[in-house]
Length: 123
Image (tube, rainbow, N blue to C red):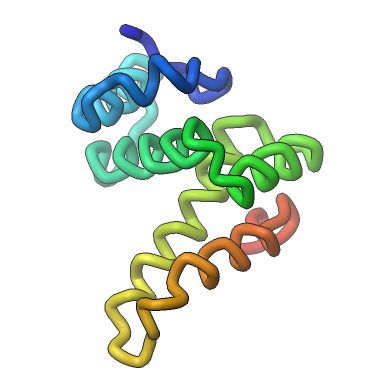
């Protein structure tokens, strides 16, 4: 696999066969070629890679969210950003000592299940 386009799901087997740095590099390259200006291209690309990993690994809440968000009118690329926004918020919350790490995955999954195109656009 030598090309990434967030508007088209990568083949899961090919995507997961890549090294994590290769996945991030492909996402960086896409944004660079598309001349999308970002404050931190590496971080942005890493979030793309994480969301694509979750989809390729068939993490059901994320797969359902992708389907729901695109059905609600987001492009696939926008849906990746919406899911990544929930992921970023979740990661930030993990730094809170009051958060119980034992139920972290269920908290993330519940937040993904609540995500809608409307809620993301309003955030």
